[in-house]
Image (cartoon, rainbow, N blue to C red; front, side, top):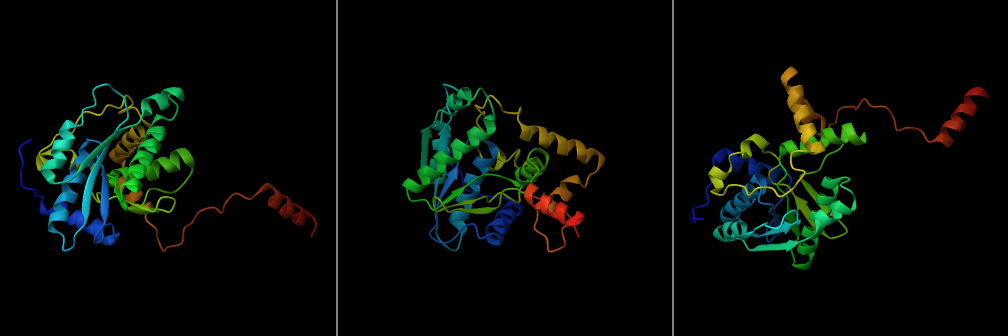
Length: 263
């Protein structure tokens, strides 16, 4: 790949800076390890953080890490290594047999297993090599979809945070693309100069997340405010929340039942 100057459109740079400043994502002398899968989002994240590194008023260090989950025999990281070299970012890679783990579980919860072991490998590498922060390429749509998935499949109102401290490892997870919509990143290769590498995942496009993505899209056709309402709902609010109280424990309910009939 021909080496090129690192430039970012002003509106993209503004969104990146807003996330970093609002949520205190990057600080002086940080050592940040980027989770680079080779998809459009992580490629842009790597490029954007390289740009920020070169223009920030303080210094911080970057490196990229790619995990081969062994979904195929021809997962080649050569292009990713060259991409990082052109950005002045050290590149590392490792292999974990996630495909074998999923097969042992008879294909149950493949996305959970994959995400769990990917995070584990990334965090372990960060701890061993002195990185205090790990950067994920989750964008705004990912956050909204996670929020909606929690409601539909777990009965919980929660999503991931732009910044999360992991007390067991001492690592802080950051998500600098949190203010980017997915449709804005579809053609981000025109900015980075690197097209995404094909995903080796056999479940790509067949997941619960894909179902939720399509559900939101369908709901938007009847109500264009659905996405913005989900966005507002996943934000903490000082307004009174009108929800039912937690379900009462059976023993507590027995006491109340007794008191009701024996006053």
